[in-house]
Length: 318
Image 1 (cartoon, rainbow, N blue to C red):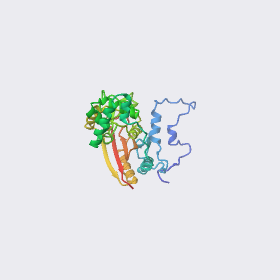
Image 2 (image 1 turned 90 degrees about the vertical axis):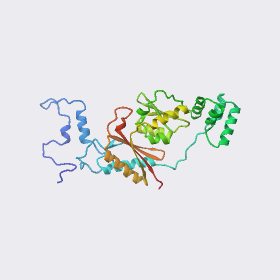
Image 3 (image 1 turned 120 degrees about the vertical axis):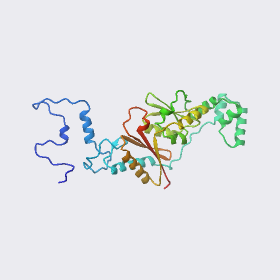
Image 4 (image 1 turned 30 degrees about the vertical axis):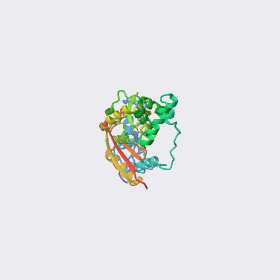
C-alpha cells in the first residue's frame, strides 16, 4: 500500500490522525485538559486546511506543502494546478462580457446651463466662452469660463458636482505617501484619480478633477474592502496634489501584456506560486486585470508599502 493514501489503515484500538485533535471525553476516568483559546483551532486550520479548488483530486498527496500559503481570494491552494484552476475561473469571471455591453450614458445637463440656472454666469459670458471654445477647437467649457470670463474655479467645480450629482471634496491633510499602497501608480495616472483619505477605517474618499470613474471606484471597493465615496476636487488643487502623489513611492508592480486569457492565467499563477502570498485577489479595471498579493496578513485598512505586490495585465485582442 502507498505510504500516502486517502484512508490510511490503522490497527484496531488505535486512534486516527484526526482523532488526536478531538475533544477528550469527560467522565472517562480523567478530566478534560484545558486548552488555550485558538490553539486547537489553529492546529486544525494548519493541518486540515482543505484546498479551495472545487475540482481538486489530490487528497493528502501534498502533505509537505504549507497550508497557510499561497492563498487566492480567501482560499488555500494545495498545488500549482489548483492555483491555475482557480485563477482561470477568476479571469473568466472578470472578462465576462468585456466589450459586449454598450455603455449607458446618463443624460447630464450641460455645464453652461447648470451655471446659468444657478445665476453664477450670465448669458453673455456663456456665449463668449462657447465662441472661444469653438474657435480654439479644444478645451472644456469650464476652462474658458475661468480663463476668459474670470469665473471662479470653485464655482465651476461646484457646477460639475451638480452635473455629476456628487460632492466637492476638500483636500486638507492629504497624505500622498501614506495613501500610495491603496492604488497602483498606473491607475492614478491613467484614470486621473486621487485617493484623498480613509475615514474610520471603512471609507475611502476618491477625488477626480472633472468627471468620475465609477469603474475604478468599484474595482477599488472589491480589492480593498473599503466603501468608496467619489467626488470632485477643485482643478488647481487637484493638479498639485495629483503631481505630488505621482512622485511618491508606490508598492512594487509588474506590467505584462498577454496575447490570450490563458497566457494571463499562466502569468498570474506563476507569480502567485513564486510569491506564496498570505492573500491575493484579482479584479478588472477597465481593460486591465489587476492582481494584488499581500506577503503578510493585513492588520488595518492601509497595507504597508513593502507588504504588497501588484501585477497588472492587459490582454490583446483575440
